[in-house]
Image (cartoon, rainbow, N blue to C red; front, side, top):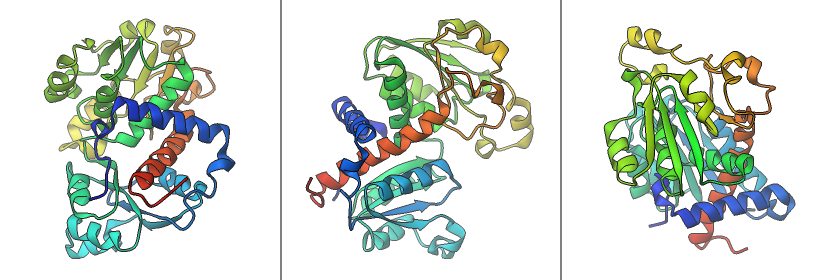
Length: 310
């Protein structure tokens, strides 16, 4: 069975550092990589709406010289007829060399990877994890701060359902002297299993608070998230919590001059557009860095599968 990446823990710290190194080499010399995947095909299996992640994977493959087979609407695929994820993955394995998959159900990417005969990259499965977003986050932090250790990182908003947050905490646990500040209302606190299995187990320094203004002056990195309507079971709870944390220029004035503001996007209104031109705003850079990290990961998995020699 080909190697897949379903969770960020599928990659060692050394492999993550190597992917960052490859991504930075792609940034420095894109022409070197422009034809490296010639003749190879990426299938994007998206059972859930996406703009950035799907297009990022597709742009990544095109910029490596490969091709894309795109399934962007489950309603127009055989899934609408009741075909299982497992069978779909087996079928697509006959057409493509690698799969990027998003699905609303936790564990769906694992099922696909178990059935597929080609590598599968998890592009987000429900509230579980989103490893390639985490790779984008890490590259952004590395390029903005010059390091991935000795940082105080604030994670703000929906920490309960935010799969990007869960993956990022797991990744940061590999690096030295990371201090976490978890900022959320009680209803959206980090799940206990993430707190105990990652933060406690790895002896990470961590503070939990509901006060963004208190936290801001302490942070090297602020990771904002939206309150995700699609993760709520009732509209009333969503409406009550959706505007819990809105970052404005007035609030950002409390932060350090070099605090980096990240967001996995899409944003709704949790970051004021008035911050977009602030040099501390990194979320659109993050989008671009995501493409480079996905290029690096596609290369790694296809190389390990023995299908590309470079």
